[in-house]
Image (cartoon, rainbow, N blue to C red; front, top):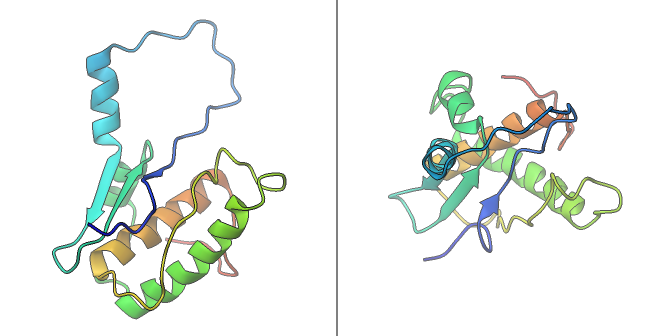
Length: 145
């Protein structure tokens, strides 16, 4: 199966700067539940591509805050994703300038490839979520919902 990303797009929530007196142990069962609830598998019946995003809070944000499916055209999503992926990959290649904990893996996105609506929709919304959550700017656009 072809993959949109060379391995898995594992984006892990960066720890807060707030200190905690004593961390509470998380049981294996609870930890698996947290990972399962914050894992979004993006695949499509239209093609053989898949993205896996593990990002605490993204799944809930996608369901509650993101614009509904088909609000944007596929052409709009592809154009924005191309810009966001380009800027993302530039930041991955410059760990001395950009936080390597935020930009861990390169995204292999071919603008000439048709990934289908669902993959483009969720990838675009992940970029919006990422920019809003981590106060980053991946393109010349004002990030809004």
